[in-house]
Amino acid sequence: MLYLKTKDAEKELSISASTLRRNRDIFGGCLIEGKDYLTGLTPTAPILWNIHAIRIKFHHQGMILRGFHHVMPNPYT
Image (cartoon, rainbow, N blue to C red; front, top):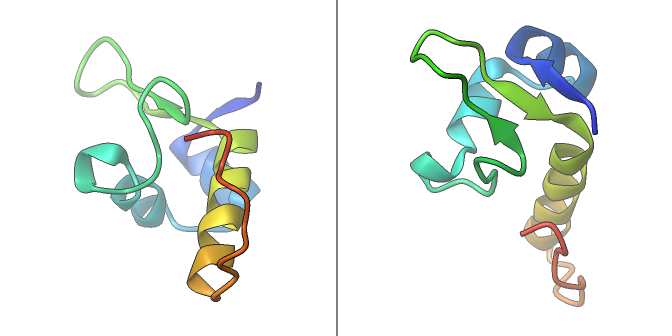
């Protein structure tokens, strides 16, 4: 698993840091703490993002939004 800091994850996934943060489970998003991202020991520690899991989740969410209702359940939820 490849975990990257927010700035590096932003570049790798070609999405903004605010999109990553907004999609966390604490804000009602699909990214789950401990699986898709890790928080640090302190409030100022960087968030580390699981690049592979996020790509799969965002792809799955995009398929649902585009109306592909026959999409298999996401195994990463």
